[in-house]
Structure formats: structure tokens, C-alpha cells
Image (tube, rainbow, N blue to C red):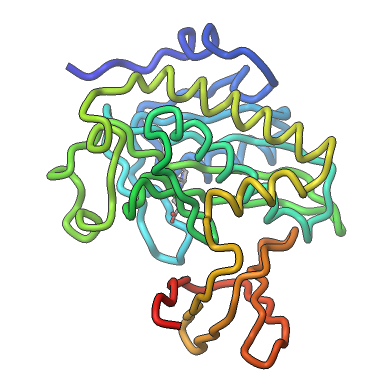
Length: 267
Ligand code: BTN
């Protein structure tokens, strides 16, 4: 028997910020991100959140990629921050969210949580969470952001669609026990609130160094491949715009905005 969502229980478990204080709960929606963008357009306040039991058109980061969103097992929240930051720095909100998720998952799976650039959350080598950030800017400033988080909680390995099965995992698969989705949602909202405050009050540096800790790639040789390029280099870090900084073979600095990253063990 699966546990039911309860916005009252989530609210009672929250300890900190505004995030998740108001939750719009939907049994089914096409995409919580689309719904949250609409709410934000209509004036939703800082920290309002949307949670759906299931999504008929859950969206992935890559164009056309679906996020498998069956009912009763996982978490599909989208939150609406309104940070006073430049539009060019909006990607740092995605990195911040990755760190917030990784902190929560580390409580359940200590020592095995990793962030994979640009922003997949893995346990071991398998993906447990994806993050899709969208935003609206007015002139050069962010008006609102929607951070959508797909977190695999109690889904069984055999219930993943075949295309995801080999490379996806869930908390159930990793811990061998069911996790309360209300508890996980409250922990996630609190963690997002803490990291957002840290970022907005003290700048990107703490987020950056925690992100790099979870990524474990600083100083490593990597290859980044996208549709038409492949670049090799040593990881120097990430910048506020979410770009990966590499030192190339002739000591030139490469700034890479998208692609898939591979650790180059032989180099
Ligand atoms: C990825 O491709 O890794 C990002 C997946 C993001 C999925 C979440 S589920 C909640 C929110 N609503 C969506 O339609 N997508 C995000």
C-alpha cells in the first residue's frame, strides 16, 4: 500500500523558509513546470510550489525527452523562487538546486550521491533525480524562476520504462525500504530554502564548492561531447552561468555550456 500525499503533513514537517509554505496539489497534470510557469505569470508568490501525483507530459531537460511520472511512487514538485539576480546568472539556481537535492539524498544514501554536469543527481552511477529550470526575465533581471525536480522515490526497477531501466535508480532500490514522500518533500523544500538563502545572501562561492565536491571532477581529465564537438581538458570549475571551465591541451581556457561529460581514465 503506497502512502498518500498530504500537504498538511508536508507543512507540519517544514522548518524553515517560504519554500513549500503554499502547495498546489494536483492529482494529474501535463507538467508541473508548465503549471507553475502559468501560476508565476499570474502573480504566484515567492516559494509557492506545485506537486502532482502524476504527470501525463513530464518534461526532461533535453528537447523532446520525457520524464517518466507514474502515480503513487515518486515526487514531481516545481517551486517558484523570485530571486533578485541577473538573467545571466539564472543557471546558478539550477546548480543550487542540485546541491540542495544532493544534501537530502545523502541522508538516505551517505557517500554515494554525485552531481553530474550539467545537473543530474546520481546515486552510484545511476540517475535518481533530474532538474528542469525555466525562467522569465524582464530586461536583464530575473522576474521568476521555476525549478522542477523529478525524484525517484519508491519506484521499482522493473517499473522503469525500458529506455531508462539500465541507467535509472530510486531510493527504494538503493536503500531497500520505502521512503515517505511527504517527509522527502519537506526535507527537499527546507534544503532548497537554506541553499537559496546562502546563495542570495553570500554569493555563489559556497554553492560552487559544494557542487564541485559532489561532482568530484575538479582537476580531473574529461571529455565533453555534444552533437558536433568533442573537447578534452582538465576541469577548472564552473562559473555562475553554469558553464564548465576546462584547461585545454595548449593551456587555453575552454568554456562549455552544454554536452555530456566523460571521465577520461586513460589520459
Ligand atoms: C532531466 O531531464 O533530467 C530533467 C527532468 C525534470 C523532471 C521534473 S518532474 C517535475 C517537473 N515537471 C516537469 O515537467 N519536469 C520537471
